[in-house]
Length: 127
Image (cartoon, rainbow, N blue to C red; front, side, top):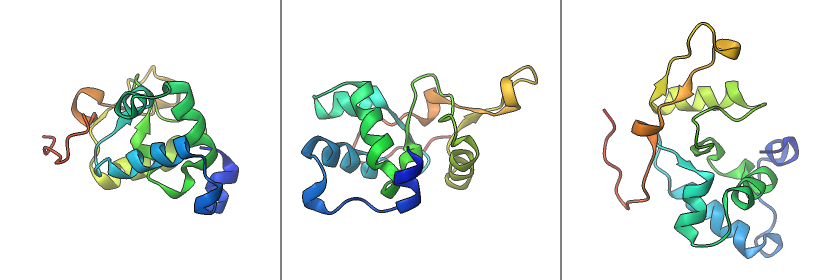
């Protein structure tokens, strides 16, 4: 997510948004609170593009959707937005793995095994 999209907090006018970007953002809005999809998961769901294309859309236009729910597959928090994302994860009860003391910055990672959403229309509670 770029500073520009974050600062605006709003999406461009509907007609200004590329069709692929609109589809990516629609998927981001479907992800239930407390769950995540990877960039690759979103591309697979759309059957178009790949992780880099999804990441680019989120970087340019993701400020108006729950951007913190579209993540890296390794569970590391989005560089430059770690603390904001962490606040959202804690508020939503997203499963996290606590960082070891040797970890850079001691930031937790997402527990991808428990937090990952497979795109089912109804979310199964994560316990």
